Image (cartoon, rainbow, N blue to C red):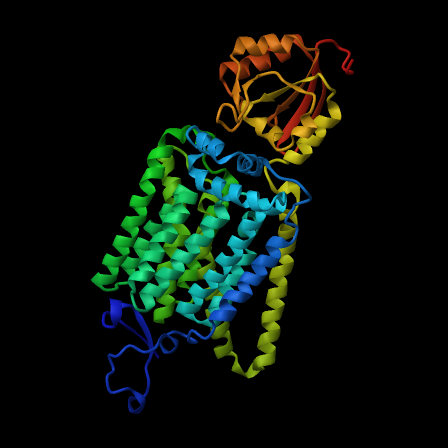
Length: 525
């Protein structure tokens, strides 16, 4: 049977040991055993625990990577900022998006090496999710054995949210991979020698994740709970505290640099009813997997103590932060899927082991058939979601379709308005489709103003330009979205309502394109 031994050994690691018959025990029962002997199924499952999940994640990420040659507005921002010069990116970060600065420089370097369009934009995320899936497998293998490792990694790769951001030209997949690396390093430190090199790598992984997105620092809160619950030695706790402290100190410059840009997230509202249902369901499944079957072995105990805080705590912190200001967005805590997958994968592995024990007479082939049928059922259930993730409808808007519609309804010399102004990002990655159109509100371009969407004229200037043209193409949010109350946006709406006639309105994914004319004759002259 399994026994947990606290203390002893280098670094005071938790050791999982198989109790041997008295005649077979070594003379020094306190001597630590090799890792392969201490852990369930040994460490011999490392290659398959990494390769199988990573291969599946890579295949899913490459499948339909261009998403029918479309991108949405956040990816459009990445694309156009990555094509600025380093000095232009640095100037931008002084005004906006400092939290994404490291990612923008990485993407700029990648585009400098390979101008591969949408593939270049999304391939880093594909590779990051593949690495994360493999690391989830290694972590579960380390604690709960080879089968748990493979299943946990596969669960991570198949999770719909993970599949979505594996094909996203943003930093969230990279953050997830670095958190998975930090979690694996922590698992190794808690189940083996506590080497200084391992803690240094752990600190560096958390710091890099946090520089890619500040909310990744919440990983330290989850891991801190794990270290406390693991009941390890004071030395291990000190090592973790030092590593965590170094990561936090290293993040301070970014926090100070970006604190003045908090207005950029003013658009965040509280979770909608559907999101609350999803959050509740994930939490319930995580808790049930941590408790079923009741954790009896040291490996099961450590899985729950490692994975449950990571699966739940970062989300809970962002939800509680709404008391001051709403901050929760699901992609900000994508890395919680690392903990969730560990819990689900190890629970499924234990369930299979228990079923095999209770029904040994059915034979190995029957068990394999049952597993195959279960896997097929999961694949069939996920197929509609998996297919939908690879279509333009899976995102909030479709910048490509918007640009094509503008090109269809406009004529050279027409004016174009973005209402609100931040929707100018729809134009920046497709300048050709807007060729010949006059941007009526723009005073300084995004590059010239070191901003994401440029600077607009005062309200009086916008009014004057609008009244000088006969036709205007207006790009705006869907009708159910709140309207900005700033003076420039108010004057756009007032002039269109009182001095122009609506000629046509096209509803698109996350947007609408409306043509206005001064006279009732809407055709371009």
